[in-house]
Amino acid sequence: MYEDITNEMPDRDRLSGFMMVQDDGPSLRDSNYWDSLYCQSGLLYFSVNAGAIRMLVPDDVSDELLDALTTTQHVVVSRDAAGVHYELLFEDGTPTPYFVFTTSAAWDHSVPDSESGRINIDFRVYARGCRLLARMEARFRR
Image (cartoon, rainbow, N blue to C red; front, side, top):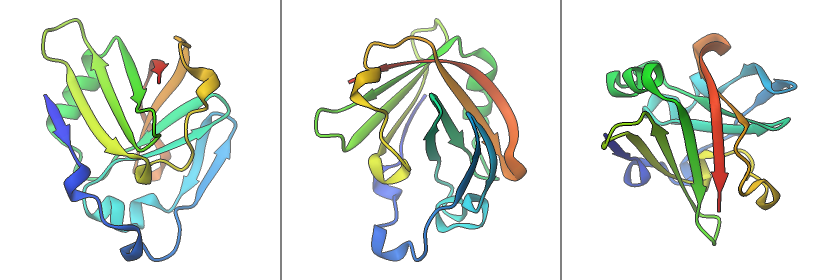
């Protein structure tokens, strides 16, 4: 399954205010994401902290994504050379894994270039109330 959300991304001018994320090391303690235009638009948001990538999912998260989380062996996170686009491949061993394509506007920080090639990044998925839905290993490549 492929999900291209680039055409649905609200432009930054429409995003009044800012995205607040409170960290507890690699864990997410609190965020205003679930009250934001991103969430209301059904868009994913990504936060990077303490060596972890956290994916925040909207209330109406797709069934395809929820299904993918149960079968994912690891996530391959790729960023283009310009640092503008990200691809996330939820590797499940099938010929058609779940796939997300997004822009850097949906990320609070870039994954550092120095992480390229790393295969044991902590990847966590959070729902409203900072409820942990899934935790798996990610691999980053640039």
